[in-house]
Image (cartoon, rainbow, N blue to C red; front, side, top):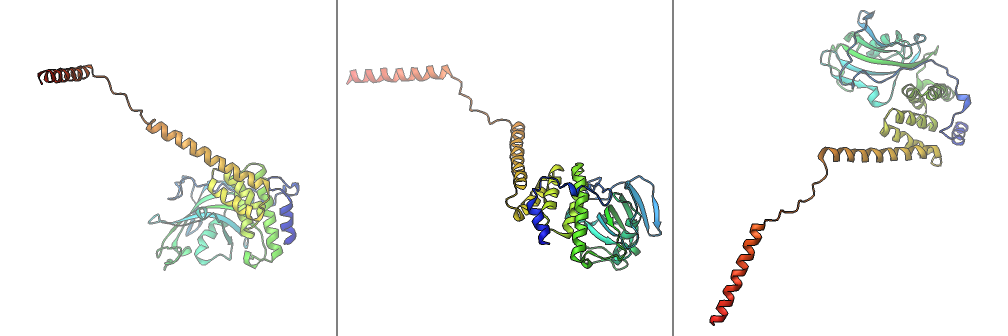
Length: 315
């Protein structure tokens, strides 16, 4: 592990390692929802019956093979109760994909697993799941909060999957297996990064960080991808975390400076916009000269002086 860390420190994170260009898995999906994610997207594609309690509509086609039993799948998803449209889960918001092993999923994830097992890498779909394959008759009163007998709507993207005969969860992998899995995903991310497929690359780096949250190169590349997508605050978090582990790296410092300059430019632009809306502060107008008032004041002053002169003579 120390050797891996030393290799990371010796390579500038803004440069490519040519040995990392080979890809192991194909494709990834754009994980941006069709709406803002508050409510399920409206989909008009054909309804496919996967199970008497599960139907699917494809939002975006995937590619390659479908996962087999015991494949470890990585998905992003949102979940709503169908009757109330209450959203109770959102991995996009949490910025952490879900790991699900087909055939070894949690009981409440059975319907979701049925849907995922029918998907190809990169596929984006809408699932309708009956309560029997969801949170059941009792529902869930902790986290997530799901009422009893609630049918569920899932918006889900299959980011990618690993074929494993044993069906091991990440917690069951050896250190060597976890490093190997992280390296494969990092290579996938690097290939997508070179093609400027920012959304897909970011997802692969998310899976790398699921294995090794302190992977400096993955943090840097995910931050770069987020910056390209306009997610400047999330990008800054990645660069600052990477900077803790590689404080002397010039590429990381350069990206942080760029974000600071970007923030300054945005601030100046906002000032100009507000100035244009409200207009410049009006200058005080000089008072117009009222000659009649001036003449009257002069006349009163003159009469006053004449009156004083007459009074002095009388005395």
